[in-house]
Image (cartoon, rainbow, N blue to C red; front, side, top):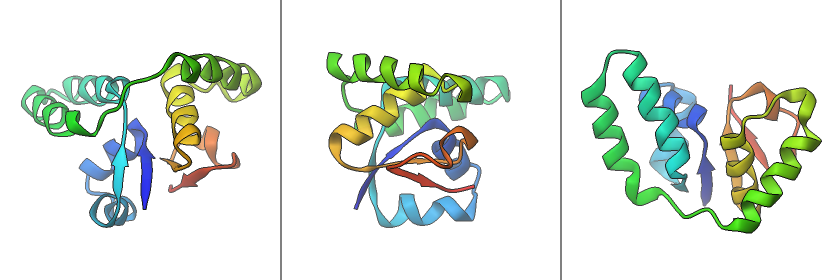
Length: 121
């Protein structure tokens, strides 16, 4: 089973959240360079530049390109969910997952009741 790992899921996995272990240990996933950017920034703000480098480099092979149509659909998704204040990176990830017919893995509360989401708190 494949899924799209958003930044929330990546951070939780690397922090050792047991609820996320099965997704990364038993399944395969994709993400984007934008999600790696957010993860990298997160580690830098925690004062962990070496870990930022390690995570970025180890996840790079899991990234896929973002096609123009995904960007357009992400803008539409963000507009439709304006009240939830979905980020551009999350909107792109969600639309990418949808286009690949895989689940969008996250714990972001904005996605709790949205279709095609594997919501893990």
